[in-house]
Image (tube, rainbow, N blue to C red):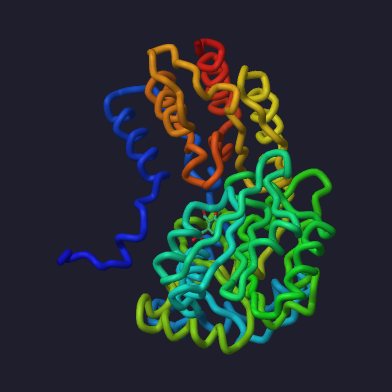
Length: 400
Ligand SMILES: Cc1ncc(COP(=O)(O)O)c(C=O)c1O
């Protein structure tokens, strides 16, 4: 009998970690590697937020807090949902955790029973299916290709729902595609959900503030108030405020679900870091005036990367609405041979050869459930992006 749990055997190791490890190995060997794999802003946390954390340390706010968030942060979260999303929540409907990741994990662990199905549109953020498996549930993957703008249609959702469906995980703007659902597109999905009262929605709004052009962000409970009682609206400070290392995520939803999530947290991590919580209070309550600057910078990088990647033979790259990723198709490269002689039969082979032969690290599409593609994170300098795209184009031009 194995020492390891049966649950663990259902989960695969993170493919993104494998790419990152290989990139680090090559760097350690002295190779010139450009990493386009990391899912985090390259900016520093704004100074007012850092100062709030420093002040919290000096004031001795360094003890345990309430398991799912201190009152000051819950109040800031309620104010955020009211101000930005038109959603009214009380502190007892709010949960704060160690990153958006723990929020999603707590909610799945708190609700899934063996056989419960969770609908996940693909391409998806790498952690969703494995979190569902760890919770004992069954991921139901719905493929949403480039031609559909990487978005799920009402027909696809309707077809995926069974009596066993417990959740739909909804993510807009999306990691890895940057695709965002318009209000009308989202309403088409919420109309389907209104016909299936047993299905709950977990909306992962992590990239809410990173939207471009005239895209208008919206979230399910706002678009369809009839779903309020079965929606968990999840968000966090990691991406919008360049706070990935601080580890604060939050969510709001029905009180009984929040209480169940609290139970898990009280028996696992106890509470998110008190110092990070004070920083998050400042992030949510403090000035938001740097956000337009963040957006303008990312939009410029998006335009640069989309234009340059579309110049590479065999690559088709859509223009996303938000986040800081593009998800080009490499259908035109599959089956060819790399300059060093590797057969590019999968997107994993493509990404590996690209890294080994040009030093550009991207994450292959199979990790996100839709192939043949790769994900570029453009949260890096224009110079690095230009150099990386030139290398990718050179690589594609020399395939045979
Ligand atoms: C779609 C999505 N949801 C959630 C998370 C987790 O965020 P956090 O770093 O706050 O745990 C990420 C991070 O990459 C993400 O891309």
